[in-house]
Length: 404
Image (cartoon, rainbow, N blue to C red; front, side):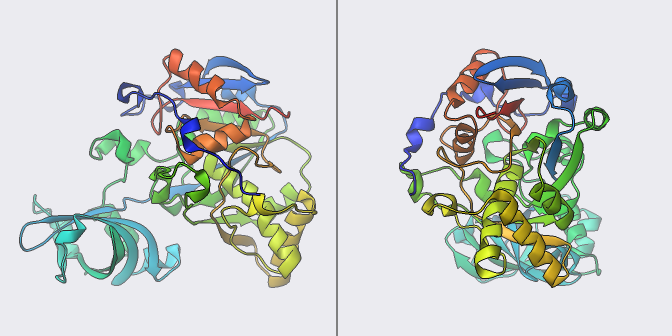
C-alpha cells in the first residue's frame, strides 16, 4: 500500500545563513554527526574511519559531474541558458559524449519563451579563441514548457565531452544563489569521480580525501563503486502536500556483476556513501524480482516497494540478476530507477549511511527518516543547534539503522 505522507510534516527552519555557499578549504575538515541507537555525537569527518566496523563493505557512487550548463545568444542579444539533462540521440551517455559533430539532449531552457525557430550561437562576450574555434550552435527541436530537445552541432572534430569542458560551466545547485566559480570545477566533484553523466554531485562523497580513503582500507573495509547518474530532478521540491502525488525522475545506474555476487552472499555490514548509492543498492532487490518473475531486469517503478508483499529473499533476488547476466554474457547490470524511499520502506541491503544535511520538505529528508525509523528530527535539531553547515557544501553525518 502506498503510504499516506504529508510533506509538511518533514519541514524544519533552515535560514539562508546556514546554507554553506562554499566548501571548506580542506574536504575532510567538515563536521560529522554520528547517529547510533537514538544518540548523537559530534566528530570531524577525518575521524570517520574510526567509527566504521572492521571488515565492512563501503559503496561509493563514482559518477562524474559534467559542465552541463551552456549559454547561447540570439541575434536580438537575448541570452538563453541551456542545461543538458540527458542524451536523446545518441541515447547512451558514452556514445553521446564521444560524438564529434552533432548530438541532441533533453535540456532545461532558461528564457525559453524568447527562443523561437532560430539557430543560436554560443555566448562568447570575451571573444575567447578556443570557444570561437568550435563554433557551437544550438537548434530547438522540440519544446515542452521549460524543457525541450536541443540539437548541438560544432566544428573541429572534438568529442562533445570536450566541447562541454570548453564551453560549459559546472551546474551548482540553485539554492547556493551564486554563479559557478573556478573553485567549483574541482570541489563540486568527488575525488573518485570516474564516469561522466551527472548534472549534480553525489555530495556525501565531497568530504573524502585520499588519506581518509586509505585509512578506511587499512581497517580492512573493502570499497566498491556503483554508478548512478544524478539528474536535475534531485533539485525539484515536493510541491504536492501528499507525497504520493510527487513524480520521481528516472535515473540510470550501473552495477558490476562482481559486486552483485558479493551482495548476494552478504555477511557483513554494508555502508552506503550518499543517498544515490542507497537508491541504487536498494533498487537491486526489485530488479531481481523482475528477473525472477519475467526472466529479465526492468526499471524500478516509484512505488514498487510498497505496492505488494514480496516472497523472495534478498539473496534470491540478487542471484537472479547474476544468473541473467551469466545467460546474456554480461559483466554489469544497466537499469534505471524511480524508487522513492519514505517512512515504511523495508531496507534489504544498506546498514549504515554517510550523507549530508538536506533541504526541508525534500524526498531526501524522507529517505533519512525512513533510515532512522522516523527519528530524523533528533539529528536535524542537533545539527541546527550546534552550528552545522547545510546542503551540498555543508557538513556530513554517519547514520546507523536503528534496527542494528
